[in-house]
Image (cartoon, rainbow, N blue to C red):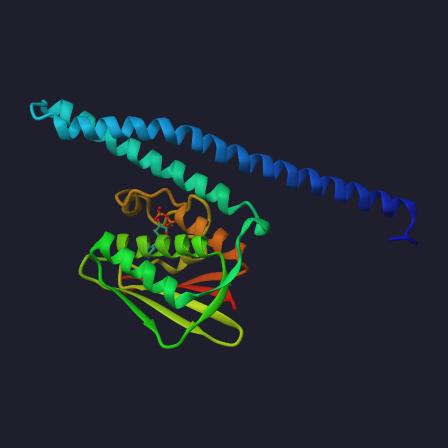
Length: 247
Ligand code: ADP
């Protein structure tokens, strides 16, 4: 720009200033959402704890009292989970610089997460990994990505259906597929499910209790590590989420 006319230089300066203000505003908003979520989550967790303990300990409740406590506990539980998701999203948005990227064996991580998920969900998790694959990732964040995807696979498929985790690697990238044999996702929704608060069918989705933030967190985390995420799915047959990671 050193030989550009003054007007062009001024325009470039204004543009840079606007960009820096925009990124400051974005950072403030991210921190605000993170702080609010944290502040609200703590007291609400206490409320939820008392409601659950009342439900457990009281054995002479009227029908009305029982229903009121159950509804209050279930709404408090949903809101605590929403706040946790917002907190996770604010953390995931913190940018590349805050990710702890290091070469790790994906085999170890995938087997570890599968074992844990199998215990918590009582589901059969089948791992397919024919060779050792090392990728440059943030271990905790990739663990969170896999847990979120497995959690969805469990939510949107029948209890007797297994879930497959397939690990592969080429010279260019590592891939992990999370494969379920569940309800599937309509074609017209497949490009939108990674948006914040997007849910395929409110009626179907509401009963599963989420807020449409899980996949937005997954996408932000995967892209924060320099990776990609995509989905292939067929209604009534199941879905495959494919994570691509740098090696
Ligand atoms: P939530 O599950 O909390 O609604 P997500 O962001 O995790 O939010 O998912 C967004 C939507 O994508 C869900 O509402 C659901 O309709 C659809 N979805 C996600 N994973 C699956 C899956 N494995 N099988 C079928 N539908 C899915």
